[in-house]
Length: 327
Ligand SMILES: C[S@@+](CC[C@H](N)C(=O)[O-])C[C@H]1O[C@@H](n2cnc3c(N)ncnc32)[C@H](O)[C@@H]1O
Image 1: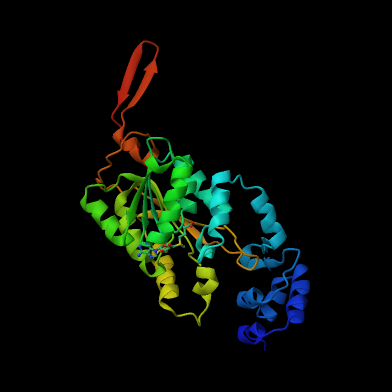
Image 2: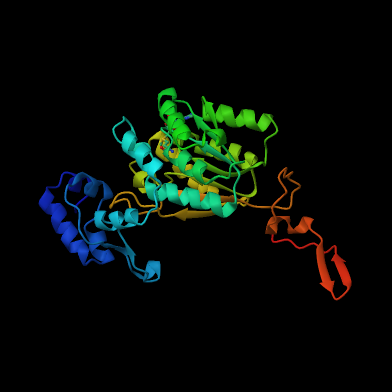
């Protein structure tokens, strides 16, 4: 039986064979080869065509395909990356840790979520040189604010330079230090339930803590996005028992039963073998408790129980005190 480890030491020809087979693949081929993502990561040859990851009964015969470099290039060619973000990405690519910055398609998704929410107050945990935070700041209204938490001063210098170049410095409140401390301070400062959106992309061992703190800071209906929730596929690897993997695994497990939030894992594929969802979008739910919401300015379903319904029929205005709620 071929194991993942044995395959890791494969020659390119084995990879090629696997790739060729998997270009016209079935799940059984994938399974019989015990195909390992780690194996593919070590091989220099990547298939040109996507291979089928799953298409059997278990998945309702729905065909799940992998992402290839060609397909990923196609995705990227459909990203509207602002020039300033491209410049930052290119400058960062020459720096240590450049693999940490989010990809253009991920940044576009974050910016889109912020726009869809009509967000004005956002938080980022893990700024690095600022790619994702700049993507968010660019779409915030002039009155908007992004609290950017980062412990590394060198990378923050790059981020701040780009905020300035992009003309968004006035929207970014940089918090240099440990993110958990900054978030705790914000809660103590009475900023609970006043944020619309948060993005977490730092210290995987702290995911549960960041989530709990952000849940206090984000308003009902607000969104928290946690990056890397599959941790490069390690969450399902029984041999991976390092602190970061365990932390993310436990976080995902706990979140499944957490009625305080709605959740959705999304696929923002980065590498052709990394074709599974990487991020989880978490929406804070209304559970009927009297959580204060200092903003209370936009209308949404969660706040419908606070609204009187007015109905005009001819000259008459009817007012309803009925309570409608979706919780
Ligand atoms: C994956 S990178 C963030 C990438 C960034 N979102 C981007 O798109 O470029 C993670 C960053 O989190 C920072 N970090 C890690 N642990 C932290 C902590 N406890 N508090 C604040 N920042 C932290 C690291 O210094 C690093 O710059």
